[in-house]
Length: 359
Ligand code: X2X
Image (tube, rainbow, N blue to C red; front, side, top):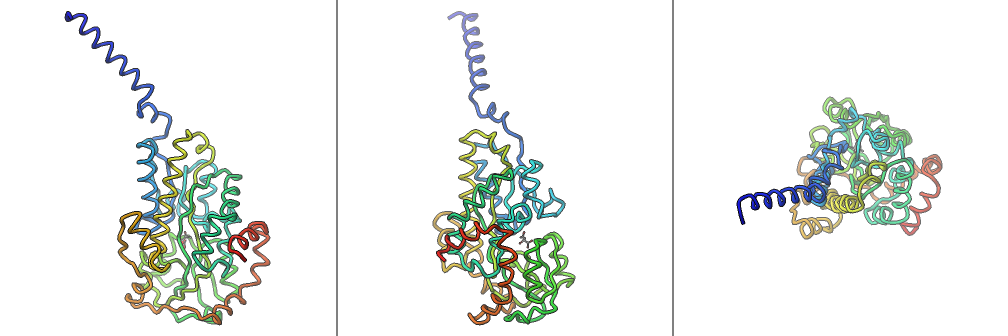
């Protein structure tokens, strides 16, 4: 072959492969997507919940071959700390996606208050039956109606009471104590019914309030109590499992619908896997070894704090568990709230929850 012919052939090959790369290669595909998708999260990676968010980011990147890059914004920084606004901002597309608690999205989705009915769910088995049963389906449907797509469940956990003043085992013990609660109205109702003095505060303001002793107590799951080292402020904890906050991965619906099917599938799978990992972190040592073994076997992950209750006791906390009778007193003190809250949640969701739990 003469030199002229050779360079002509080389030119053709180069041209052809360039053309091919524009039509087929991931870089061409990447043009369809944003450089970065913003995700809002109320906590930080120091929390199991934040670890779950990081896992989601990593898995989405991997499963979409780097096409979808999510950037988490911690401490509700995109919302200037206003954690209760996450659903609104994802629904209107200002934020692309979120990994948020059912408590924080309850102003937009009152159905989510089903998880905040006091002493209703009580254990992980009931919670799983609801999430993966009719209740969970109905909640995801409600989300879609208002412009967000629910991808998968994760968890914050059953919320426990802590305070700096005394052991609490009866409703009377809360009388006159000031508790920080999330700014969701059902929490104010519950604590008022118990004779306490609830103050609502964003999470961003809560830790400084514990530090300064502005409040006597608060309520949160172990996955929050341990990273904030609650024993530095509160010596007493009552493990009453009074309500639970699952966490949901969700995405702006309009944007979600614009994604190709294979991308949707990859993101959804990432959310399910990250949710399973994160739930196991939050439940580790609280469900009789089940979550510890999920972490080890499925994720090759050894839990640093395999027994959170013992860990908190070793830090000097007095942890109280309620007897059946003590528990009954709390149930009686708060039962009137069902009449007020079931109509707001929706009778239909309430009935589905009862049926999922086999009641
Ligand atoms: O604000 C809280 O207490 C927290 C971190 O648990 C939630 O986001 C509901």
